[in-house]
Length: 530
Image 1 (cartoon, helix red, strand yellow):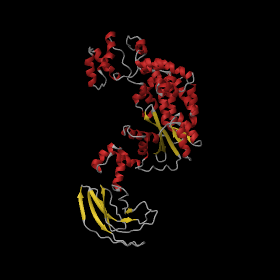
Image 2 (spheres, one colour):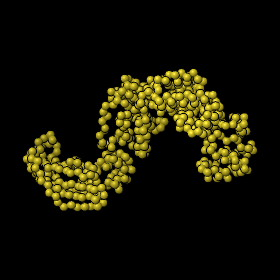
Image 3 (cartoon, helix red, strand yellow):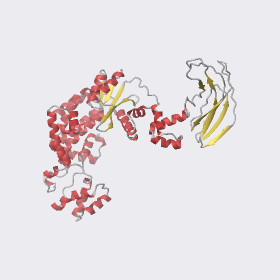
Image 4 (cartoon, one colour):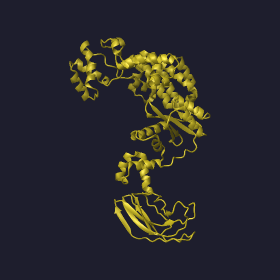
């Protein structure tokens, strides 16, 4: 207290404190009457009154305690009525005239609930949020409003960041494709330390400059994170995430196999029966028309010096779409647009067999494959069978192995493949030289990554650049642009995996809030340590 306050009177003031449960905790303080609540695990609560007599002289610690009656309230709410002392201040300039005595660990100033109940409500609010937490508290800790739970979250102190040595950085989406933020994770404790409302190099550089002493920055291969880490922590080692490296290589391998999809069939091309449909008619869909209109336009803007972000804003496209149009030619894009995987592809062998048996009714065939698990529409079956009525014989069903499945076989460990998968992969690799080279280089890179042999990356990049597979050459060129971080990622044990896990947790919290809360509340819930 800022002024000299004297005790002018002793008055017994009843105060009610509600509690629902907790461990037995003794409370000892200087006063006339104190209370202690012992609540067992079975829900049976016991209320005991303990009398403590204390001297008013300073330094006197003598106290006597005498047990008295006990009330048991099985399965009911416990109400503790405390008789505490009230102090008056005779200093007229003091802002506070009355001071009430508090029970350590049980009551707080201006509190309408016990400390234990407050902790329970805080945990519920952090786990569920406002409305779901309020619904749970009705049967758990008493009725509270959603705004009360949100106020408890906002009243929590922000956790101290402390000293950081290894930090993980990744982006998260307010709205996918529109607005992004940045999450920073302490890799030693695997806990988030801060949340930034934007994903830019300036924001990351400013945050790193405010927290000196960081030695390692784990990140994905985003250019703005690399620039921000270089400006904010110039002495720190940047480590590219190994998972993103494998994901980028897998995407390149899948594009190669999609371009050479003829090697997925067990029969030669001259023995495959095709529909008597003109090739030009396959490019009349809306997706094919968009590709034919946008891809040349993106190529011209790239030649004029436009950036990927500027093109995306001008054409109202996603950056990944613009990047795909810029890196792939028109024939490759059209092959993916006209030969897309459909829900009915898995049932084509059955439809072909039933057609050969004489069943040509689309409604009957739709009912049969629906009973087998088909989840598409009847119109999809009619469109697929309409050409069979014209040709008189069904076309060859599409291969049962997709480019993505073959890519998975190539990127997996050899010992994890079954004998059947290994034989099928060997047959596919033997049918195309480009696919064989791609499979060999991809397997070697995956081995370097798993064994952390970053010193051998230079030899691998030279082989990739000397090959004739343009997708693998583009991947090797991208590695050159971020060479130091890639080598560190293939050498050091640090990984950005904990950051990705915290991004998943952030997504769960964000989606549970249904978009009704602001960034401040989301940041509190993500950074809270329960």
